[in-house]
Image (cartoon, rainbow, N blue to C red; front, side, top):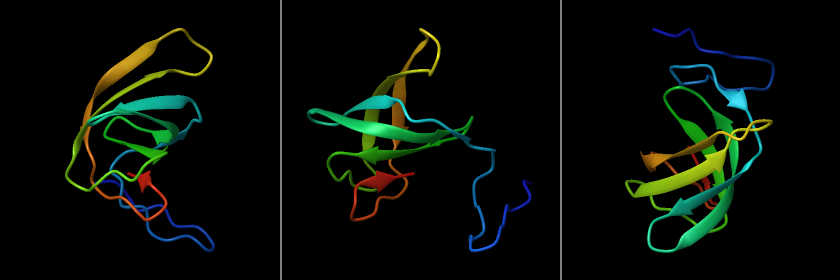
Length: 89
């Protein structure tokens, strides 16, 4: 099991894998195309800032390019949580 990462002024990190900060544009699809920003990425998840609020439990489709490469990533994911600003994790 991963050790929680805690720093000054931070809360415990509940994620199982190390997240890498990234900032590419990500395209999300539930019923319409929704742009957003990919905040970080790991083997087991990602955090995004969507332009519209996505509901917890929704399955969404996503597509983005890895920074500094021409590699396109696409797939589907379940929204695990969302706050009032549209941030999902």
